[in-house]
Image (spheres, rainbow, N blue to C red):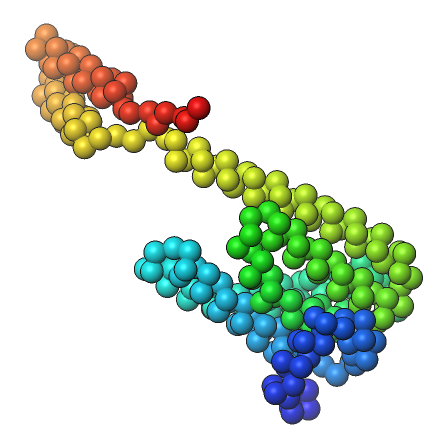
Amino acid sequence: MEGKGINFAAFPQTAIKVLTAPAAFFREMPKTGGFVEPLVFAVVMGVIAGLIQSVISILGLNVAAGMATGVASIVIMPIMIAIVGFVGAAILFVIWKLMGSQESYETAYRCGAYISAFAPIAAVLSIIPYLGGVAGIVAYTFFLVAASIEVHKIPSQKAWLVFGIIGAILILLSITGQMAAKKIQESASKMPQMTEEQQKQIKEAAKKMQESASKMPQGGQMTEEQQKQMEEAAKKMEEAMKNMPQKQEKE
């Protein structure tokens, strides 16, 4: 029955072989045999990657935030790898079919699942801005090319051309995404901050406006005194907003 007799003790050797000799691994990889073993392998790699990310979070942030992020990584990473594995296999299956592969979806899934051996290393590389993401994409491209040649019998030149273009697009998206995130973070850090006194002034002004509005006669007309109070409250709010400190940019 599918899923019986999974050799967990062999997972470390499998991961090492994928990372050090991908061509030989994919050449010898069974193309069938069920989804359970490669799925479990991918989940185990996800757990290890999540543990690594948790350690990075604890070392890079305050302990409280680091612990929360770390626990989330341990839980979320395996789930993501398990779910994305099936979706990613469907995408790879279509790409390989278009390239001339005669293999099944199961074979495509097994290829993608065992490539997840790189996930723990990708987690370590993620601490390097820009270059870490680029290195990860280049490595995954290399593994996909190896699987294309050895499992799907795609000519080397075609495999490098197709996955090279896909990898280049992903690298571009990764860099632009990180740059956009950095700009948003910088913009947020430069937003004006209100002092406690300014917050107090705005609250008092708002309270006066509310009181004046509540005392307005039913006819909807304000008395001269109420108009004066409203104008003073609005003026205080305007002054408080104008006096909000602006962070000066360093020359």
